[in-house]
Image 1: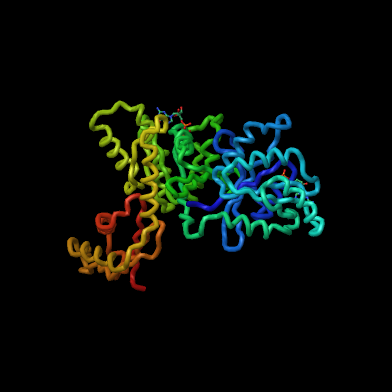
Image 2: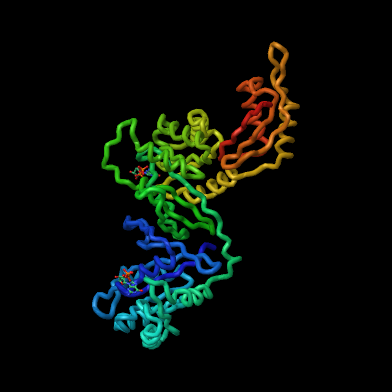
Amino acid sequence: MSLPIVAIIGRPNVGKSTLVNRLAQVQDAIVFDQPGVTRDRTYKRAFWRDREFQVVDTGGLVFDDDTEFLPLIREQAMAALAESKAAIFVVDGQAGLTQADEEIARWLRQQPVPVLIAVNKCESVDQGLVQAAEFWELGLGEPFAVSSIHGSGTGDLLDRVVEHFPPTDEIEESPEIKVAIAGRPNVGKSSLLNAFVGENRSIVSPISGTTRDAIDMLVERDDKMYRLIDTAGIRKKKNVEYGPEFFGINRAFKAIDRSDVVLLVIDALDGVTEQDQKLAGRIDDEGRACVVIVNKWDAIEKDSHTIYEYDQQIRDRLHFVEWAESIFISAKTGQRVEKIFELVDRAAEQHKRRISTSVINEVLEDALSWHTPPTTRQGRQGKIYYGTQVSSAPPTIALFVNDPHLFNDNYRRYIDRKFRESLGFQGTPLRLLWRGKK
Ligand code: GDP
Ligand code: GDP
């Protein structure tokens, strides 16, 4: 389960966004303005006492004639309520009770979520109590006099809000996995993104990335959070003619640098190109986990050898990420799109993996017994004393040796292969540091 959500409801100008900012105590708006991609809502993180939660501003509830909400707005608000643990109904204490408030209250009483009334703009405490009293009439329980501008009264309100949250131990917040979707133009990145977020089972919300126009999207699936990096970059309309050298590679590089796992998307119709190789090189350099996605599998004439041939091509031409798992999908038909998440989970797990020193040394001992390090013509032989993991993401193992120069590339590759054979590490780069005695 992820953080509890609190929906903020009310007509325009009552101070909803001021309240949201007060609760979240951050001023940076997290907005996503691409219609049709996700619900147009703003989520912010907030804390009260020892509880962390998200507040979502549903936007002002507007009526088309005095009795009906605009259907779209109502839909938005219902969607927000559906995922909320509580709602705060904001009214304007200075304006007093309006007919619109009564309409909203009538509607809220039918919604399956606890509602608390915040009577906003009550700066003076005594006056506030008087202002708040008339909102008992809404039939939603005790009205709380608050001032979103000053912050007064919000503590009492939040005390009541958090009572509706599930116990903290039921909310084990799994750390999100940061996923970059990288590939040349037209390989199907935005189609894949659509396939991900179109999934009914996933809850999607936009959050700002590192720069103003780099918009990430959070996808929740099976209680796990995935942050899709720079989805705005993927969706950017391609009215630019790209030359063979330019395909927004810097943007792709930036996304790769921020990710844990890169989905390297290849077009099955084109096979592995030089540009794909560049991206693979970057993934390896940056030490990111990777899943190779061969897209447009629906458009390929297949026989029993086809997958094997593609696998071979990927291994040969994408040797920078030869440790990555690959999957053959169609973003268009949705074939195997679901399965990508399993591969991402696996790669992310391997990427963060830690191996005990004793296991590392067992592997080394075994490797050394099969194949002793080379001896120079002068009769000097390489010696590996021991190894230990010094960091993860990607897993990095330091090997303490007598002299690193005594180990040629062949032997280094052999040790690398032995680690992978014994310990797996599929989907992640593995770094071996050969350290001599000082
Ligand atoms: P929203 O449309 O419901 O999101 O309302 P806003 O948060 O944009 O606020 C509407 C207006 O009410 C702005 O001019 C705010 O400065 C003002 N406002 C918001 N909260 C308070 C408050 O606690 N006290 C007073 N006096 N004004 C407030
Ligand atoms: P992007 O530039 O990488 O974001 O690629 P798009 O998602 O815009 O897709 C480029 C073109 O490939 C579009 O015409 C898509 O309809 C098509 N396409 C994407 N995925 C598939 C697929 O799985 N199968 C087929 N046959 N076409 C696809």
